[in-house]
Length: 518
Image (cartoon, rainbow, N blue to C red; front, side, top):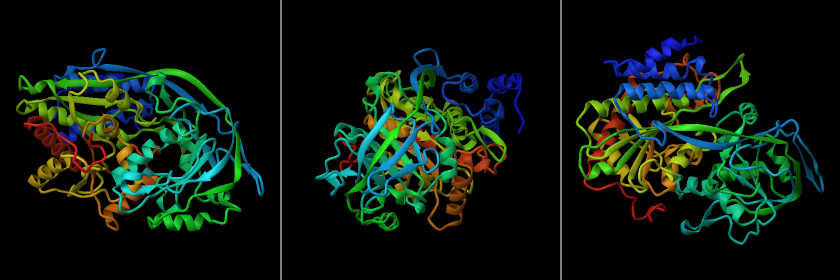
């Protein structure tokens, strides 16, 4: 792939928006996902080079800086790299054996510091969902203190995907508060999204967590690992339960048993840590109403990706064209659309986050420490991998059933000949894997937008194959087929939604039956 020269990047950052929105959108994707950006890893000069490009485009659109330092909001992180090859683990007890760390088991680097040593019994906790209000509680009657909890993907079909996802997001903190030593998350082979061979490569990259302990969900060292679905059965040896049978129950969304596993896990974790800082980018279009301009509608995406890593088919640059240069380009397109139209009553914040790939850290920092007054952000409309790979006819926005934003989105969609549909794969946890969830956690209604598809359709096959072959891979690059004109149709939809929310008499609210309703 070609590499853009510095002079070309400067020209692109300063040029006025093209008359053709699709051409401008692709120019922005091309600049950010070029090999010269080297994958935009959080905390690197490559990320800062991409940030300079984005700021140049924001300036070209005439948007005001709204960070804590110009357009920037610096965020301090602790970088943690688990050395899979130097770490060791074994199952002890009857039938115990050594585990191949980095191959069949991965010790994960994010969320918080890993303990140096672990020696703890194992407890299978079903789906690991604490949802007593919804009539499902895998924690009920279980003593997790001092244990490593093992959980399986999935959940009851009669509970919404957003609610289940939110429970998964809270799980580590809840377990840590109850004194658990760690968690091992398992995935059924049918629900596996990223091929295990690629998960092994990504696990060799550094994780991050906040340098400020006050911002962390957990404060003591906590063990975090996952297993190859093809070898997870080893954990259940001698338990009277087979992993295959448990997977069949989970794939059918049926209840799972909870039981102690015969083995203990002993592990020694080799990890190196260092300090890094990386900025969010914040710009503002001031609203036209003297009173409502003090409130803000956020439009957001993340700039970071995975950087340079283990090569696949000879390519070591994880460009992140769809994940999420496409989302940043969408935010820039929406900025141009809103800047050129009538001034919205509320102000619009354009938020470009760092460290999404490290656990939504940049957005979590901004949602907790915004550069505008707390409580003034009324909504966040987020882009993360919308995947314009087929014609836009339907849209799904995980969490749309939880707030009035869902009705707003449906009204805008109908006016444009589009249809809002439910999340077709709610147990894939999209709701908690994108930056809008950081705002949800702070009580702000928020949505993320995806090209819709129906299960069993040709579009579903395209989406599945893209995730299986390109997601978190060097092949998420500029050579892949992309429908540029369809991409900006989604931009136009979200721009109209942002305008509707910004001009509304009242701010968005949670539905009375939502778990997020205060």
